[in-house]
Length: 446
Image (cartoon, rainbow, N blue to C red; front, side, top):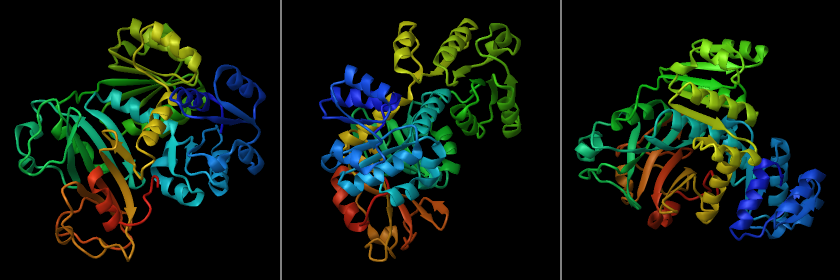
């Protein structure tokens, strides 16, 4: 449902992948575009109305995706689709915080199988690029209190120099896996990673940054970061950069928005000006920045701002690209670091489909392992026992526990309790054991 930039791209990509796709769209001009350019079925009408969904055949679909620009319409349509017989639903919401903090509420109330925010997907990818290539994957769990990070290891990392048992990890962090090429390894205390491997870290949001800095030796001096555009995505990126001790300049064309940003981010330098004005960029010494990120809602302004930043020899230039028709232009100009919300949404949904719609938060190595959330009930075999008493197999790791608002990484003597939200790292061959010990519905799928 929804044939805007995200919906159109999803329909085209999934159709090319061989799936049978039906698009529900209210706007006549978008209907015509889909009919003229894509090999899919089109149903005209409001996807938040049962007769329209019935006409689209949602009762027979494997996956219903509500990806319009209206959160309310998406949630309503998904609930109706599930009530009419849709096997699974994916809902796109606009604000990153809704996925980080309120995902479980939406999943429970609206029976959503996968809740995604293109803003969160885009922000995460941009932050990874700003911070260097050590962090290649980040996921937020337990309402944003737990993260999973996949980092690349070089010869200077403690994990490649010593066995895992001898590496003094910060409290509330855990190394749950190594990736050696295509092989996923659950390390024991005697195992040592090799240079070029990646490690999967799980830990509380407060502690995992310290673990990453300790285990990776990549660029830690991020220099000055210039964010051109103080809209919703720019604000989210700026908010995430507050926890890093770096200089941030935000360029914002609108005077009122610039004043609001100055009040919200007193530590950052807020500049009222146009990123497409070379004189302004020179006057504000953008040439001294290490990274320039164009985040306005206008692709043409982002393109011009990036060209000027390159002219000023800024080492790293990144851009947000909203519209499909401008993507080819960026490629012709050999811009490699562009981030498209519609493409990132497709990546996430494709991962969900390829994993067999399994009950996962993070699917790794084509489903070889998953990270899942489970709520412990009184009847759960794991409730009331310590990890040492449970003796889970090596491919099943209790990575973190949320209990009454507090999150911690459990050790052998820690006892699990009914009501706990547990975050599990599970190899494919141990999924049946995980379901036996932790029965019930996972929080990000079925």
